[in-house]
Length: 424
Image 1 (spheres, rainbow, N blue to C red):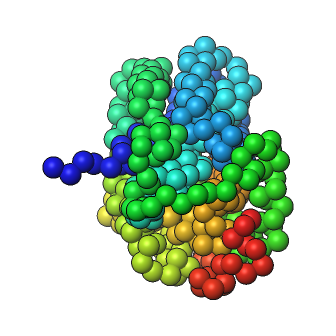
Image 2 (image 1 turned 180 degrees about the horizontal axis):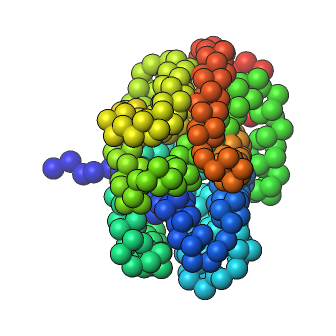
């Protein structure tokens, strides 16, 4: 009987680790009303805490990529999960809004950073020679899996009990994953006496930069990447990606539905329902990114997402469950389907060795967009008493992103070695 390659075990551990980190971030939307009612905090302040978390974990991405090269995969995952667990525990004793900003904005933001930014491309690049796109698609979809399974559960716990038992469930899952990472995670295929999946012969990799200061490594990657036009096009489109997904839908969709009289559990179930299609769409996107022009994939992803966001306010105003289900399906398929082709284009342009750091900076733009929408959505609601303008503008921005990606120059193998771009 043929043994399962250890790379797939690493993929599974990474998959479930990202689920835990992802559910902490994506659960913010179901806690907004609870925090507002119990503590009397202004919704824009709560949104600021969640927005700070999104911005910080995105900004930390390239530094996490650099630290992976210095500290190693296993230690970084242990430190990050322990930090995330610390933030979850401190949530139980907070009673001031500034504490929420520190705990969720900074501690949880830093703890989630590794898992939700560069871990997927790093594991795919170092543990897989073949099926990289599929590996990235599976890992990216893991945030949707946690959302799919846990958001309705968390919402039901909050409705029937309070937000504290819901946080307790997340705490238990974090503890379990910390133990699994400690026992079974490995830094590289070499530690288990194997090669990356699909690699027949070992290739000696350059160790240049391995012992440099992680901050120097991260900024060196940025300073060289900003000279490439494609970096700005990817970063700009990913800013809009973050603005239109985790920043807006992840933070405010549940509250938007509640404002139209939809119960919390039902709204969370719709968000969870998106997770089903997100899981399918993102995994399929990884498969497609190995086979088709990634620019055109991104063009259609952003265009369809923009159309669905413009449809949402109309669906809620009409009270049409059918239209809301259509939105959920289209948006779910498209939620983070943009990640595999974005990573693929980044790898094509900047090479395997540095693509994780460069993608980390691109993802920082994603989270800057998410933070903008998380806080901006709260402000728009505060001034207009509705989220409608926030969702409509996000849809228009997505159409703009589709234009950004389609003008990226198609990469040919002969181009990848020109001007030393592969060595960035």
